[in-house]
Length: 306
Image 1 (spheres, helix red, strand yellow):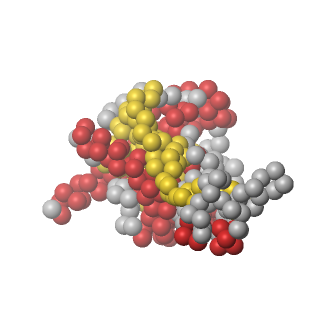
Image 2: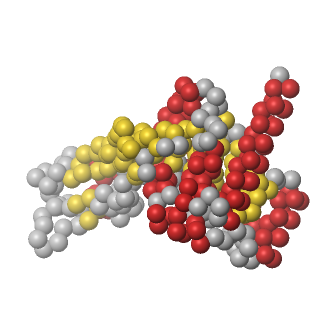
Image 3: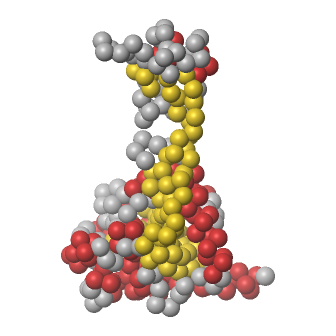
């Protein structure tokens, strides 16, 4: 089993579109398992149109709740809350209330309430799903608005996908990772054989690329780069290429700006399923070939060392 995660230093670099197109390309010759680890804004399913097979609740952190009948309105909870989650009563109410989105579950109000009117319990923060797509089993999730522990939910989704990949045996796990460098990204790249960094020739490209490369290197994950919309700013594209060459990072390829990508998204399809002959589709074919060659090379090198 080989695990490939697609990441980016920021959102909007075409990460999910690339993941879907790589799935379409790879599924012709390989057994695939897919995971959408961008649980705060999951949208890989839009392009893969999977049929949901199973749904599981995701239990998040603690949230406080005030029993209106026990509350005497002393305001002690309001005084000790550091997150402005306690709402004082207005003219139509007699007791304090908890803003569940602002509540961090620290339980300070629970311990300080003299009437024991406040309780705290874990909440259902979202759900994760097992679905069937034409390219392979998809594991994905959905966080409720304002909930936390998305890193934990990413780990839940990833672990289920890894177990499925091991069950299949000789397979490839493609993971659509979250943007940025936070806890969800760390959870998404854990155990990966290769991180494909999707970037684009913008003003902050090198800065964003440096951050995500430092993150994956810290966890010992091999990295490679592809440049999306590479022809919109040739000067910045050359800067990215020079940066990769100086840092010894493999450049998998360049994807030109292609209106067919937008058209394919509006149809809910990977671009190479929508138009295999489009410039972006041809470029992505080359990127997949370079990707597969890279993971095979690393696998052969590991086997030689053993």
